Length: 324
Image 1: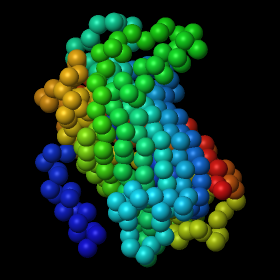
Image 2 (image 1 turned 180 degrees about the vertical axis):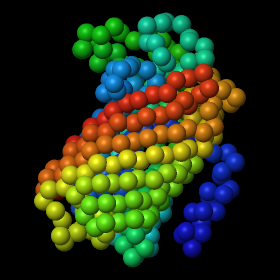
Image 3 (image 1 turned 60 degrees about the vertical axis):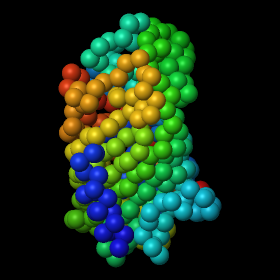
Image 4 (image 1 turned 90 degrees about the vertical axis):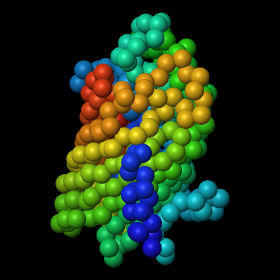
């Protein structure tokens, strides 16, 4: 029944289906074999080869998973496999977007708008070990706009680092409430236990921030515990190290960081419907190391043009965590 409902939603929403969220904490390549952990994630396009400072310029999150969050009232809204092992958690995310130049005090027509996002995420991850599949469900609540204080954050960082102070944040996307729901289904297709895993990805997002339909594959190579096996895993490895490659294609419908809020239409500058790229390609690749209770990851992401007059973009990220 759950599977039928999931694919029915995909079919109904396909014609209206964007990408604003950047930090994916529930993907299989980031799976923990423990249900209690804390992780910190930091993104910056400074990690790219050209050390750019535009579009998705910075993001960070604090993530906590623990069985106590099963009692969170919001967890009742999260879809999961009935009777299967499930991890519950909360994450706080904050990220910002800028045009190609932060030196101009004027609106750069045809470029990306300034935008800031802050969200509290309630999430669950359930695993059906018999069918080798995972279902992640996330409810995002927050704000896009000045209330997210992304402009103040970037200004403070540039003042601290001695870089030129950013100009133009007064033209950013105006305040809008974020209510977004996300489902991500992953199924293992090929497995060489401990060394190789290939799985499919299917994701849908709906809400006031981002509407998107996404699909792709994830290839993992190295020495690791399977994300599709039972957990807590009685034979967890003390040392795991592996690399992954994740190509993803997206059908794009709406992105508040590009087009402004669905209800608050007072933003001084936004991109029009005809300016949005309706298909994007994204490639995530990285390396993960787990040493007993410590988690460490470094990755990079390539993203094709999100709007027709835009550029491709590359950024990098690090994630550090500890199991408790």
